[in-house]
Length: 282
Ligand code: C5P
Image (cartoon, rainbow, N blue to C red):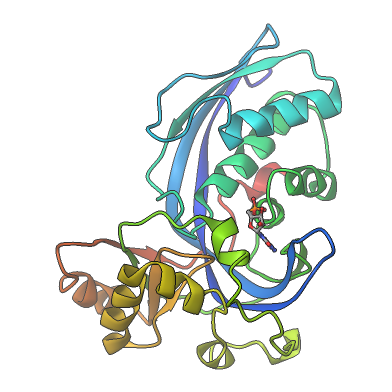
């Protein structure tokens, strides 16, 4: 019998480093980054509708249904494939918005993967990634489904192996607007490109997030979180912020740090994933 609903996971990502190497004519920035999937996830219930409506069934503070990336993702796939079916989308959001952990992009990617399966529209991974790029530069990575070294604006992906480990992530309590960070006059845009062959968990420690200086200047609380977490290791911001993370070899080491995070910040631990939880659907 044809499947009519699916429970989805939309994992967060961390940028293990992020170098801005240039700027395209359209204003988008050329980057090099390493994307790491982690086991902290938004969840969604997606069900087929026999009419062609796309409906988000729950309210999410701060994200109107019309502009929600999951609704736009469903509409995009529907238009692209001329599918006559619709969907009810219920999103349980735990990932912070404007946090740099890719929550919105991951929700959109999981929506595309799930609906491509339920609607039997049969786009392959490359086609779905191409479609996802229209929704945001990080969306193709979540469809790609494995940890990746990324170039271009984030859509040229190569698989990387990363160690099994745990991360402590601090949410400094601000939402960072990505366009404001990328458009800042002070942003360094000429990092010397690194080679994928040189990527390793040791090299990664010395490779920085070029967006961090600008984000810390605009949001001093991000700087405070980096400084606090740096006492335990190589703490960095992810994406354009605001979240800050540090890697640990095992869960016990991460727990020790979590227990000391000042009450003013939300914090959590997450395990490195080697594959996207929905990768089998593609
Ligand atoms: O693609 P996404 O919606 O995530 O990007 C948000 C904004 O961040 C873009 O409108 C652009 O201003 C900036 N950006 C950029 N270069 C990238 C990714 C994002 O300039 N590679």
